[in-house]
Image 1 (cartoon, rainbow, N blue to C red):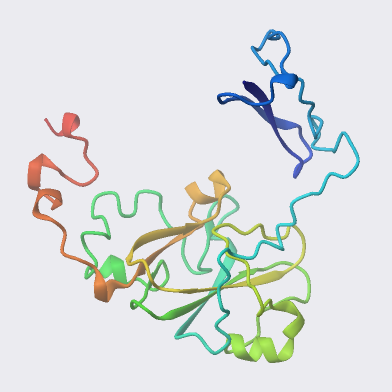
Image 2: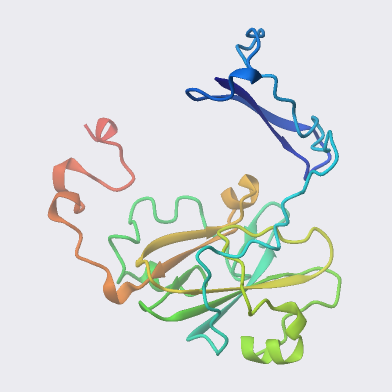
Length: 251
């Protein structure tokens, strides 16, 4: 049977929606109908309209602040091994941005000398643009968005912040997220805590394309003490691979 899917975005002032068809075998035979002009053969009705408003009673919206991990994870409540306070904002001009508060991250910074291959290079140890960690350690990343308002990070540790504002923290079943939506007005901060268990090179960045392309990013080199040797077949210079240059262009 073919079910129609509508995915509206209700977070902004414009109407954005996507559509799709979900087919699978069998299904409820009583829900069939002759195919419409899109090929949909079910009598299912949408739960939301094009503005992401519910079309019937009993609709429960997803609470982004109540997404505990499954299986549950025990919260680590002590001080982390390292704390990194990042100041999100503009960098020297109206169109350049920074995640660290010190420098912008050029979009082609590691295109020709990938950090994955050059973990001991000076570029990999630029603390304004790169965070290096040891495997197994606990890392605290504080994102501070500066603007008018009272929520400014003035603490020397996360433990100190918890003691001052316990109500700001979820220590029972903390969220397990890879993306966080910051506020649009006023100053705010959020603490991200994680244990390094997946060594590798990762990009921490804003999801607004204009902000990312103009510098709002940093690199996290996790677990550098446990990085394996690059296999010879993937090493720079092998199989005519040159960083930042496509093989066709190279020829």
